[in-house]
Image: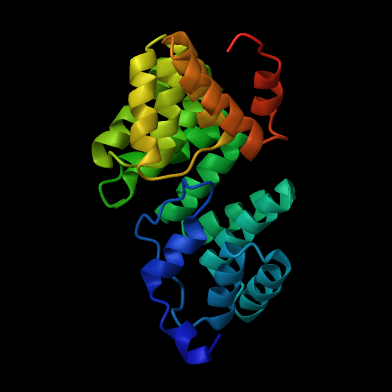
Length: 253
């Protein structure tokens, strides 16, 4: 990778990579602290390629050069999440937010992190700020994270409202579509679940979860052949998943 090529990575591309967390990151106007920060750019590139040790080395070098680099802290927090080092992840998210308290990307990522680790009220507060901010050019990401946080709180109707708002802003946002597939199935609206899946497959590949709900929705609609096709695909593509283990014991497809 040539040095000059790295310098051509623009601020938006860097922000997109830094903020990508479970497909629900938010650029939210985030910019690199220094577009010529090669170690930050390398760290983010390696992180997107899942080369975690190289990513860590470069992000730590970025912080050694500038300990106030909020985006390096943001990216390093995501890396520590991937390494299941959640205390360190939280520490770097907190530092990033202290350094840039109005950074929508950091708020979105940290809010999602807090919700996923049981700090629902704190996480929801950050996500509410991010999802309602008109300066956020990717509000649907924060809305989807907020919906997932509401699901963790047992508030399915509120969650559904958030997912629908996300899809009003971006009707092809895969994470929101998969969540709506699940909710539609749970509500017994199997045709709607089928429709959300079709929209989802227009922009993303199957997951174990989408296949599980697809198989059960088709089964409920009486489409046994298609249900069995989804079941077979689930067992072939995701044999070690919890969904495969659950569906493998269902005999009457």
